[in-house]
Length: 260
Ligand SMILES: [Mg+2]
Image 1 (cartoon, rainbow, N blue to C red):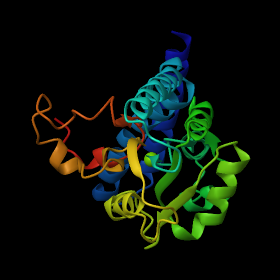
Image 2: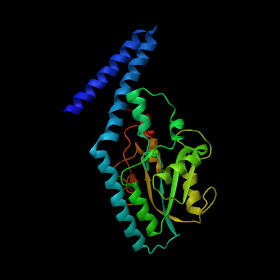
Image 3: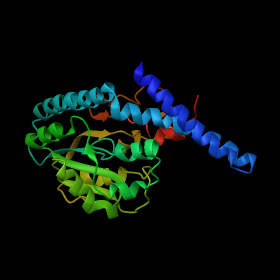
């Protein structure tokens, strides 16, 4: 209850602050814009708060990685897979690295620093359960492939960040187009890894599990299509066996969906 009161108080203070700022605006259009942004701000604040500070967030990450490790071990045994024959693909941001220091400072301290500037500091922390999971898969003989839409110019600092946080990897494939958006299609890089072709630096490998916080971190899944499909049909059948999704209520391709 105390947390709710404190959160409510902070939100009211922030909304009052935005309201006061709005009074200095000259046009109705600007006032409407400020009201819209305050609404989005309040929703985002709760999402960041949940992600950073809830036991549920911590538990979901650990649950997913713990169950995934068990499922992968079973598949390796059942399919008699040998080291260097198989691997897994993971997204980086909010899957393996937690960047919410940036979100927190933006929301709570009104820090306007660009996200890429934050990423370039290499200060992102590991998500819950990821380090033990990666270690287990590496020891089992699987390749660890990171595929992220971070811009390619962040390659060195991203690899350094992962290593400093104790995460092993065999390769990190970022977005060579440097578009700076999470919506770049990852499928060409997924196929390159499977076929052992550039930009993959590894031999062809069987990918037996995929991890991400965005539906588009998974092969041939697209947000616009997924929300139109029958959820009781085949659309989600690979989740829990080959696809493992982590929670991200802060940002993602879901934000473009209709609020209904
Ligand atoms: Mg991500």
